[in-house]
Every structure is written in structure tokens, then in C-alpha cells.
Length: 340
Image 1: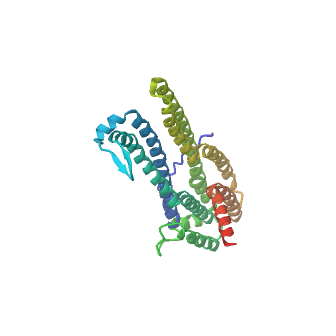
Image 2: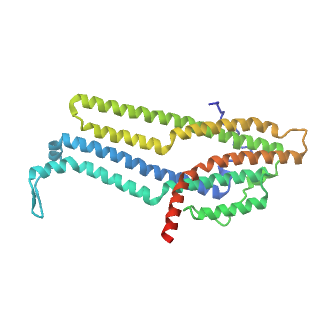
Image 3: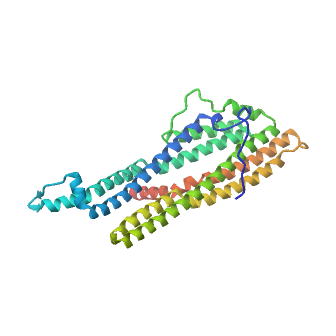
């Protein structure tokens, strides 16, 4: 993958357009998406970790039943509906299962919370809306969309935000910020510089960085899985018996589930491709506006170029919605059948 230099534009640049200078709707959806994503993966992480801990606890409980019973001071038998369990049997059963059961209950609660709050679907919708709002702002400041068309589309996006548990904008929040107006009024040459530096280069750096990060994380998890298998083999050969096999498969399965859930391999490939394509756009941007063109021609050429780039970025952003589309189709089909 080609190297992408990080944007070093000075913060005092009067035409810098970063997240700080975008409308409140973007800030609200961006924060909401980050929060929802963290909650979703936190519940997923808790579920997988405590399922693995339950497997470990079950194995340890069987190996060291007496020691655990002594540690917890477990004593006494039980009698339920004529079924008598001796003190010794009850003591051993409780000691070998108490921690495993506790960990499994926590895992079940985490799964139920993740399912109940639908954060996986919610953060994808919020992220898609946030990126659509950012793209809309860039289209406007580069004259790729008219002011009225921008306002109409922004109003539609604000209505979508109302359904996504997002902080509503204040009545005095600017739909078009002062910085956006300043860039909109700048010359095509200045707009070209701003778009290249603060849109194309920033996105290329972001995608390239994420691709490298996901590649590292994928390799780390794969190495961890191999390590788990090696530890399991050592324990089996060390005389702990085949009971350790259940523990190893549970932990390795948890790592595989996390890897699949985060889509590290798919995203690293996709983001690498995105960064490469953005580098091509950066090279093309230098030739969009030239001195030999009239101001109107420069503006038209730049607007056409921006439309092409933003359409390309929008296509990638729709991936988040495509992942939940099959679920929606199933739900709609079920609702249709129940209504017949």
C-alpha cells in the first residue's frame, strides 16, 4: 500500500474545514455513532470473555473441587421434594460449578443487553448519517450542490436523526457554519487547495491508517489463537487430561468470533483499496483547476470533480447499511406474512 503523508495544514488556516466547523447535525451523529459502537462491542467483549472464563472456571472447579469448597467454607446437604443430596456431594457440586455458573450468567446478561438495545444496527445507521452529512457539507462549499438543495437535504437528514436517539440541535445552531460560508465564497483555486488538503488527504490518511491497524489486529488475534492451541497441547501432555480441550476450543472460538465480528480482514482490504483510490484523486485534483480557465469554468470543473469523489465516498459509506439490509428484509417479510 502506498504511503500517505499526514495532513500538516496549519490550524490557523482560515479555510480549514474539519469536524469542528461542520454543522451540529454531524457532531451529534458522529458522537452518537462512536458511543453506540463502543457499547455494542463492549457487550460483545464481555460476553466472549465471560464465556471463556466460565469454561476455565468449570475446568478448574473439577480439578480443585476440595480446595475451592474449603476456601468458600461450603458445608451441609440439601433435600428437595424427597430428593436427598449428601453434604459431600452437594459440597463438591457447588464448589465445581459456582464460579462457572456466575460467569455464564454475566455472559447471558451481556448477550441479552446487546440484543435488546440493537446497538449494532443503531451505530451503523448513525455512522452512515454522519458521513452523509459531512459529504453534503463538502458538496455545498464546493458548489457541487445549490444552497436550496443543501437546505432541503439537510432537513431530511435532521428528520432521520430524530429516529436515531441523537441529541437534537438547538434552534440557534447554524445549518451552514461561518467557515462553510467562507470556503463557499473563496476562489476556485482556494477551494481546490482546501478540498485536496482537508478532504482528500485527510480521508486518505484515515483509510490508510485504519487499514494498517486492522492488519495488525488481525495478525495479533491469529497469533493469540495459535498460542491458545499450544497452551492446550502443553496442558494435555502435562497430564491435565482431555477436559482442557473444552476450555481451549471455547477461548479459541471466542477469539475467532471477535475477529469475524470486527471484520478486520475485510475492512483492511477495503480500506487499502480506498486509500489507493484517494491517492489517485489527489493526483487528479492538481489538474482540475488551471490558470488558463475562466472563473466559471474552474468552478464547474471543480464541482464536477467533487461530485465524482463524494459519490465514490458515499458508496463506501453505504456498506454499513448493506450489513443490516438483510435483517430489514426478513423483518418486512415476516410483518407482511403476519398481516395476510
